[in-house]
Image (tube, rainbow over all chains, first blue to last red; front, side):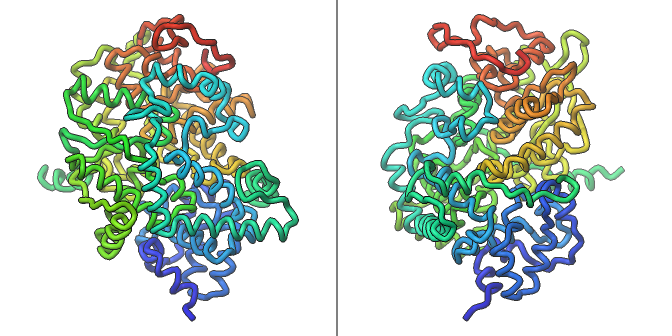
Amino acid sequence: MKNLFDILMEDIRFEEGLKACMNCGVCTAICPAAEFYDYDPRKIVYAVQSREDEEIIKLLKSETIWYCGECMSCKTRCPRGNTPGFIIMALRTLSQKLGYFTESEKGRQQLAIKRTVGENIFKYGYCAATYAVNPKMHPEQGPIWEYILENTDDVFERLGGQINGIGTGPLRKIPQDALDELKKIFDVTGGTAFFETIEDYSKKKASEMGIQFDDKGTDNDYFVEVFTANNGTHTSHENK
Amino acid sequence: MNIEGKRHIWSDYQKEIADDHFFYVRSCIRQSFFPGSEQFFLNLMRNILGKDVYENPGHTTCTGIGYHSDIVPSATIMTVIARHFALMKESGYKNIAISCVTSFGLYTEILDTWKHFPEQLEKTREYLFKATGREFDIPENVAHSSDIIYKFKDLIAQKAKNLLINKITGEPLKIVEHIGCHYAKMFPKSGVGGAEFPHVLSGMIEAWGGNVVDYPERRHCCGFGFRQYLVQANRGYSVSNTAKKFSSMKPFKPDMVLTNCPGCTMFMDKWQYTIKEMEGTSFGDKGESIPVLTYEELAGLVLGYNPWDLGLQYHMVQSEPLLKKLGIEYDNADKFKTKDGKQMPIPQNLINS
């Protein structure tokens, strides 16, 4: 059987991201996540570099691989040409494929992202769209956002938008044949299967945790749990 | 002094930007939050600069937000982007103009990946053909839409109705520029000025008469962090990073923030509201908040367009303090009207209004 390091090496981002880390810690110094989370990308690269299954499994089940914001500031600064951000992306993908992501609070959130951004892609052909940003889930958008949602057609018309219209323009309706092609691309490239993997392991975890789970939507206890739960142990000591 | 040597070093930081005939791909966030910006870009290109910009109605999201929140596999996003290249080929275009920094980062990442791993390019061709029957070419020129405005910044300056000068004091406006992490941190060669001397926005500010503010956290992330914002439980990361950035720029009393990435624009606008609600803190001069504008909105103001047709009223931080400094006459009665001049309700509790 292949070891986990070899499986990770099949991910081009891992191959591109890991040369030989000398543990200098520049990535951690520049990292916006390390500023506020109890997080050190240097340690992740060090652990992966050990090539030991035990170390890698620990990471795949951990909270720590989910703290990165993928800003990729580390790519610019590493003096040895490593990209911790790419390594983390490969670890996150493997953690989901093997079902380990449900072992951590931050990892379980993948279901919430699949049910929001993921569903938007299939439904609308957009990752995000005005009508899909619900003020209840996004209070930080402020009163202007509620106003825009209440007056969307007028707002978009004045600014030259084409909301749900046919043809070109901001937020035009994506034609059905384009949506069909997008779905087929997901089917052919493993994107749809990846969504199903996130769903399957999440359902299993919900039952283990005794939390109500629906196969669709955001109006069920497990979704609310993974979208909002924060056990308060994630921030770095000085920011607690 | 050996100027040739200097020129040679500096050439590493230059970027070739096509002159005409662009295939335009929209941004999920820019068109949802700043639709007036995308439309002004097209208006500027087509009607003011006389360029050919084509939009194909069948293009979709690049799935970049899903990819960077780790729900979309790399083979999938490569094939979605390859489909955009196929639409471009079918429409007869070779230069792509991208409205989103996340997308732009991905286009550059994927083109780089295909160079290093030619077998991935072949696999993508097979996937795309199997899924859609389409074939694609690699674009000849890849530009972010701000690169294109940068290219024509001096032409815009020649046509300027409002230079970036404080009309009250006569001093240049103090402008913070934020280029967004994925513009040049990943693939420095793809951005104007690279990761070390990014010039895409500062070049516009200088050409249009303003001063660029240098401050300690100038290159810090806006705070998006993909999953760190998308999931409610993680938003402490997002708002904390924004607060760090704004606290760092506050002593320099900037008149406005100019942004490259639509996500950064939205966060730097909306988190100022949130931080004010949470802590009562504001980061501008005299207790005001700092207006955050897209480069299209700023170009529109410089060229004398009505701020309410550009969509400035639909930010959380209102731009009147900036408009006053610029000496722009605006009509309050026109602010919340429909295209046909019908009065709309007046939104309450906006900032700076």
